[in-house]
Image: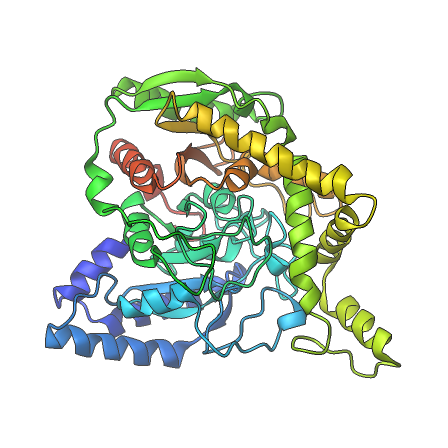
Length: 484
């Protein structure tokens, strides 16, 4: 499989046309996706037209196109004028956005070609890509297992080589956890680093768009294109975008890596623990300094997250009422029935569960006891990370407590499903960046991810450390069972 960087270099060097690169990706989707369910829609004709346009720009030798000819996929909660934006929900099954989201604009301006939309947990609410209204996405390393979620489709598309890179969104681990389960690199940027304009909201203070790729270098390439201030998003931060590619050569030696005891306690699978410890040991061997740290309030993270996230979801999803847009029930008896029946028919069970939880914690008499208290705990979690980064440059630990679990295994046990995000949600609550990189395999041949976390706007340091680790290992070069 060609990396994103290799593809772009070949297109810019006129050794490969953008049309050829995109046609190859489209053919790979047609060949591989039927049994995996990574994509919900493909725009073959539009993608080939866009590729021909890029070839014309390259031939003229005009403006620099850092992603020239690169076929990419978008998670289906990112608005695009072409095709539908369904969010994996019957509620938006036929919805066509009147505009392109910010990241789609950035990608296309850089010469990338969006070939289609990937499957996801409904409205990004899930950790397995099983709650989609349209299909279940399967893990390419073992098709009886989940790929993680909610951005499972994008992760599978990259892991199998259908596309060299893709975008997902991360509200509580929805990029990093599927990256870990499928053996690719996934980046959750600093909150405000990438504009959310055109991203269908789940938890507005938590959502962030980021890339999937096979290598840290490719992830840095994509992130450098989609990052930057956007006045259309009030939470977009006007902060200079670092030279992410230039920081890839930063040496490991001297890096202070914090190891929080809270990430290595009860519930962590022994094989995951061993692989993560081996990765940390290799970094130490190459000159990193390991420092034991404490994140005192992480134990409250799950409870805090599922109060704040569901409260925001309840508010954000109130707009889907059968009137403005989205699914509308066929024959309502009255206005009340129009609202209730449209929402009953349009939303799946996990979305309904989270709306009810969120509405409850925001209701009179419970707001102070739950929502307000959760906001205070969030502040304490942020302080824990702030104090930790006074002592260390990076924090390292596992991405998930286990490797990919079986399809259907946790569907009837929501709490067990929620615990799959126990090591990722604190990063979203704190608003800091994190990267998942492959660091090994368990006895069943399933990938294991190492999570690297840093202070706000330290994506360059994280990706540099990830790149240096990948120069020492070959886990990211191994291909899933379905590709071999």
